[in-house]
Length: 338
Image 1 (cartoon, rainbow, N blue to C red):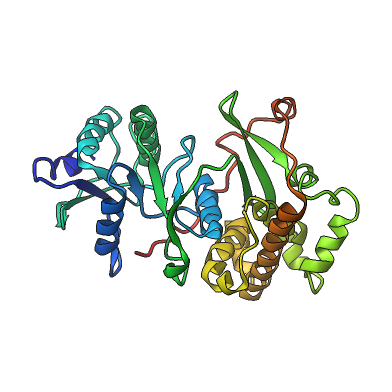
Image 2 (image 1 turned 120 degrees about the vertical axis):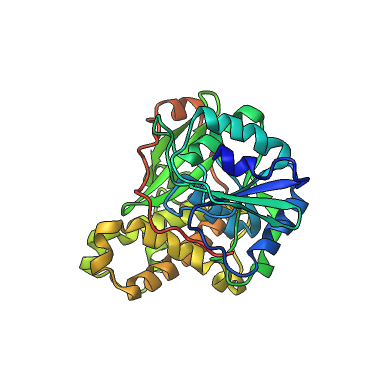
C-alpha cells in the first residue's frame, strides 16, 4: 500500500484515491469522486459498502433518512474497495500502513482532475492479520479524521438524496443470519451492547406492550408466510427490524420515495438469509419481504412520531452483554457501482 500511495506524492494533487486491485469503476465514478472531495475536502471518503457489515446497516439508515453520506462507525471495519484520503493524510497513512504491511500488489496510479488515484489490494491483510479496512479505521481514530461512506447506487433516483451526513447512530438495528438484532451504544463504557428486538420494541409507542404486536402483523402482512421461507427468515424478525429502524426516523418515508430506497431494503433481506440458503431462496420472497419491510419502517416511524421512544437507562444498558465483532454476518457479495 505504501508504494501505491507514494506514487502520487509530490504531484500537487489534493487527494489520493486508493482502489482494490481489480476493481473496475463504472461510468461517472471519476466525476463523483471529484464532486465528493470538493465538497468534503478534509474527510476520508469511502465509495463502497459491504451490506452485511455494521457500516452497511449505518448506510442503510442514512438512505432512509434521505442523506447522501453516512458517518462511519469508528469501532467498525471500513469498506476498502475504494476510498479517498486528503493528500496531507495519505502520506501519513502510507507510513502507518508500512508499519502494518498489507498483502497485495499495488497497481500503477492514475490521475483524475487533481485527485491522484492509486489502486492497491484492499482485501489483503497485514502480517498480523489486520484487514486494510481496519487499518484505515484505526488511522482515522488516531488522527481524529472524519470518515464518511457514500450512499449511492442502490438508490435509483439519486436526486432524492440530500447532500447531508447522517449522524452516527446510538441505536443500530441489524438483520443478520435470519434474526433481527439491536445494538445500543454505551457511551460511558465506549462499547456496543446487544439487546433483543422484543425488549427494544416495548419502548416504541405507548401501546406496544399490549395489543400492538398483533396489530402490527395485521397492518403489515397480508398473507401467511410460507414454511420454507419462515425456516430461513421468519416474518416476525423482518417486522421487528423494520419497526426498530423506522423508529429512528424523524418521520415516515413518503410513498413516492419507496422506489428510491427499495434497493437498500432488499439488501437487508438478502443479507439476512445467509449464504447457505441462497440456492433454495426465491426471488418472489425477496420482493414480498421487501414490501413487508417498507411497511414496517413506516409503522415504526409513525409510532415514534405519535407516541415517542423511551430511552434505555444507563443501568439497563450496563446489564446487557457487549456486542462483539463476532456478532456479524459473513461477508456477502460487494455492491459496487459509481
